[in-house]
Length: 108
Image: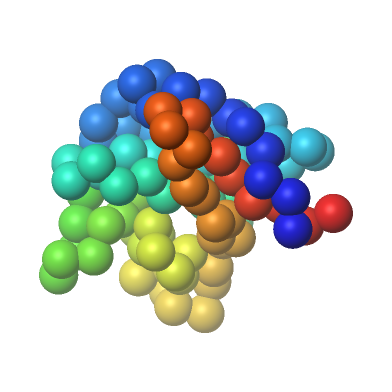
């Protein structure tokens, strides 16, 4: 596993997502209201479009989530499971802060 520098923490607006190209993958990064950073694959499996980073950040039963901007399916930012159809998932990436720098782990 390799850690890739993505952006500064201050570049992640709270309760919003941003997309980053990490290697050959589009990764959707989210900063939740409590300051935690999460990373999911940006591909919406229902529409086939790379749009999850533009989704609506929220919570469901205390779990941080993002709702797809196209069809509104809700995905856990922790597990990547669709909360509306649990058999559907999106990739989850390990993310960490190195000082003020957001890093995402990718397998080589």
